[in-house]
Image 1 (cartoon, rainbow, N blue to C red):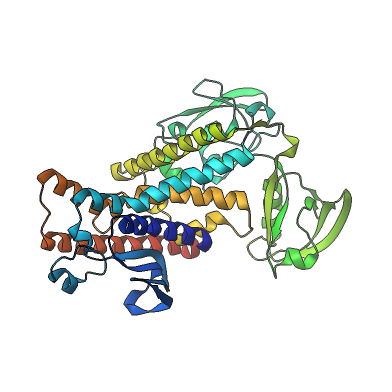
Image 2: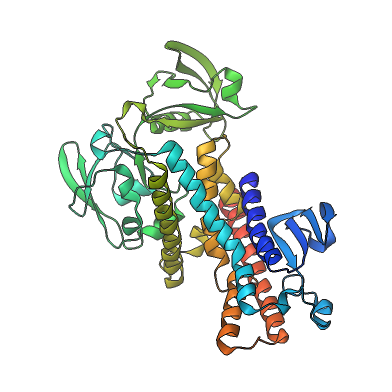
Length: 434
């Protein structure tokens, strides 16, 4: 997680840096993370710029000479403007400098998706091939779904692929009807009007998922599974006397064996192996499971380089529009902000414990696009706030007073610090307390 965020922060700030240098503007500092209260892990100077790494991992910054920013260097602003300062340049050049970071984030997100589409293509699971149906999570059960249900359509219309169930027009829709077949009988379940709020509040982050067989993907050092001799790639087929086929069955079996030692049978290289294993007080043994879709025939779409680029642009635009829809739901009160907003701790959980290059780059691309969107919000102290003031300046054809800009910067910093406290507090509450 830290690697992904570090890449995004450095490249975002590099966008500002390169744009500033292209117009002959002096950049005094380039930092990954914040050197709050003057503390830093290291620094070095090349030319006019000090490069370094701060200790507070909440972002990064470039200090551009002659610009009112988070440093609030009022003394420097009292001096006559120098030709190499930000404030001496025409508004259109300053606008490009302020858009440099979000431009890099957007281009980076598109580029990563472009390469992922080209290398991996796309796999889609046809609903007709989901022979075991779905697993109903806690929220799914509350809505009326049952494990084993077969999804047949939405609003009476057939849908071809499983992932179509999670498109925004369904997730953000009102009273959407999901058609199912249960034990040979057709039925329908209507999603409530506040479905999106219930979904974001769900601790597992979902309501249903495909029911498939599974295998062990990773083990946690020091936990019982590794001590027992379970290995990556094992297929767990029996817990004591209970036959295990699906992941939901394993979770149920372990949850009823808390603080007990059980016999676990696995299939490894075609051979059955049974071993005793302790279960902790949370009903876990220290394994990460991966769904095994190999037995399901999936449609694999391969893309040419040009087709991959088109698909990546579509993905990037949809990510931005999805975030716009999400913010619209928050501001309208349909979705609770505390359920929707993720901080560093929440993002860390998305990356997971096991290393997976495809997952890493997919999440990094997604977060890059989200950062581009977030930084363009018209909040003073964010890039979007500076962009708004520059656009006003270009319209009225004169710069806003430094006093107005300084006050706006202070207000923006207070807003951002308040949001950071709330986001971190929300992360801690959901992860360690709730």
